Length: 237
Image 1 (cartoon, one colour):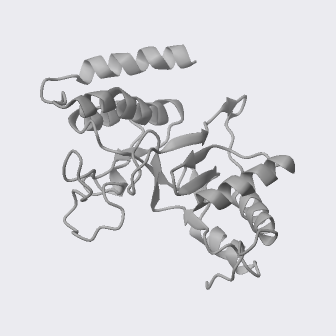
Image 2 (cartoon, one colour):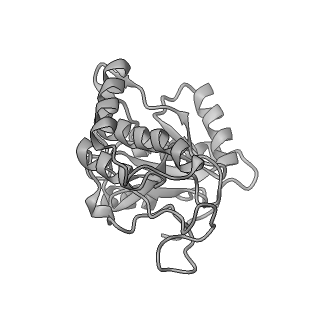
C-alpha cells in the first residue's frame, strides 16, 4: 500500500512541478517533499480534507502573513484559501503546495473528517501512559512541543455539548477541534516554533482507519486527570 502511494505521490509531484513553484532557498527546497507529501498522504490515503495554512511573513519571521499584526497563531491558521475550501482532491492539494511549498498542513475537522481533543503536552503524555496501561485503544496522536491532539471519530457540536454538560468537571486544559475547526498536521511547524509530529501515526485495519469515540476519550481523560495534582478543574459551559 505504501509503495503504491509513493508512486502516486511521485507522479503528482512530477505533474505539477514548474519553475514558478520551485523554491529558491535551501530551507524551502528541503520543505517541498516533506510538506507536499504530508498533505498528499492525508488527502489520498486517508481522504482527509486539507488546506494550506497562511504561513509566515518571511523566511525566518515570527510574524504571520495574515493582516492581523497581533495574530495569536502566526502562520498556523487558514486565510486564503478559507477553511471551506479544504479538499481531499489530490490535484487541488498538489496545486496548492507546489505554489506554496512552505505552507503548513491543516486538517479541516468535523463533517466526515476526524475531530480531535487536545491538551497540554505534559498532561497528555502522562494520560496516554495511564490509558495504555488500562488497555484503552487510542487512535492517531498529533504532537507539538506544547500540546498533543488525540484524533477521534467525527462528532457534532450538539453531541459535544451534551457530553460536557453531563460532566461535573473536566480538565480546563482540554480543547475540542470539531466541525468548523482545524488542526495543524505533520510535518508543519507549530506557531510557537518546533516541529509538528505524529506521536502515533494513523494505522489502517481491515475496516479502514480506526478512531475512538469522543465520549470514550473524554471520559478516560477526565478519569486520568482526577489523580493528577491540579489536573482537574471546573469548566464553565
